[in-house]
Length: 158
Image 1 (cartoon, helix red, strand yellow):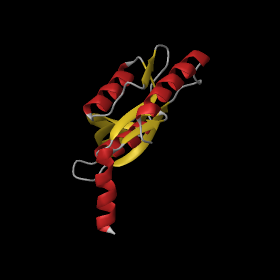
Image 2 (cartoon, helix red, strand yellow):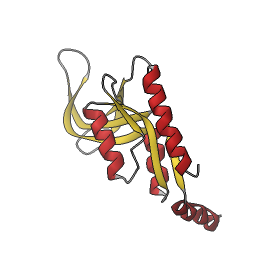
Image 3 (cartoon, helix red, strand yellow):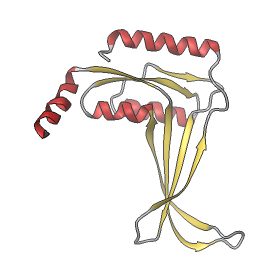
């Protein structure tokens, strides 16, 4: 069983894949809690760090790229700071991002997870904040994305 799985994973290096879907910025905010607010019965989070990962279709693209496949990612992000961060993270991970459509006036989908813990304890997710697009793409953007996907599909094996 292990050998067969290894053969499958090694076969990815000879494959070009196209991943199409919602490209999401997965943001993790890490901190420590030691007090409760006087304003409301809520924890006070002392900020420690923030990390961005590829989420949604970006996560799937990252996984197949990590297995060795040449990977194209197609989807939409905004021309905003999070869109830039997602674009750069895809490039850093070796994912072909020419099919990521960057649009003015569109907000990049963001899922922010807040993880808290004590100084010496394991961190747990205490809340998730979703910032999602309020509306779909207009006809022009849909057509442009479809064109990018069709061109990449001609190159991809799957």
